[in-house]
Length: 202
Picture 1 (cartoon, rainbow, N blue to C red):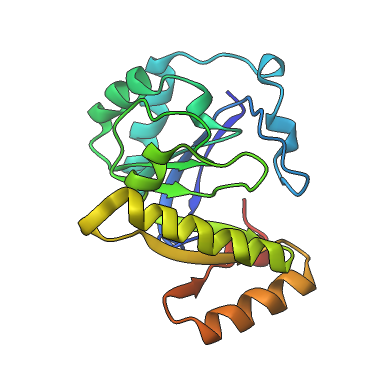
Picture 2 (tube, rainbow, N blue to C red; picture 1 turned 90 degrees about the horizontal axis):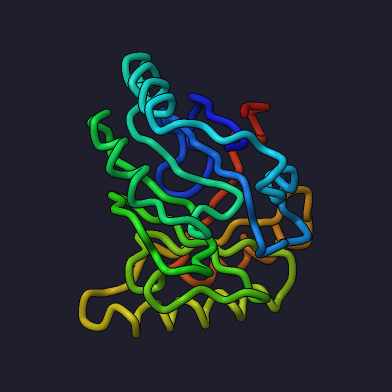
């Protein structure tokens, strides 16, 4: 377990909402631009009991958190079923942030899939995600984003696809210009910003 904290969701369609975050340690995806590289080595972070996490989540709910977010690292390296079941007692919706490289184990109200070209997601997550959020640094990322959108639509069939978001890489002026221009010309996509960083929040 890397950390827990109560803040505002900074990215995606849920941005600006009060949330309690549970950040799990361990990630084998290894994105060069990752802003939580300290979370990668799982063994460097202490284990926490489910009872402790549930107690903290209850406190956050009492303090105004509107939902719970399981993030990482890469949460799907683990079976999240027991954690989800334990957190059901808190009575708040469970959200997941994942790259989708492993099958889903656990039940979530909302799934944010942020796929990576060097480690594409499994089809199951493309079919289940509520929002597809691609980080943009280069034109190749835009091509990858469209491929993922098509695959997500195909995986869902007649059910329709997820919300489509492009998020400029942090401090990447080129990625920002590319994402803004692409969204301006493609109305099925929308821009996602890391508002928590812009505001100096956790």
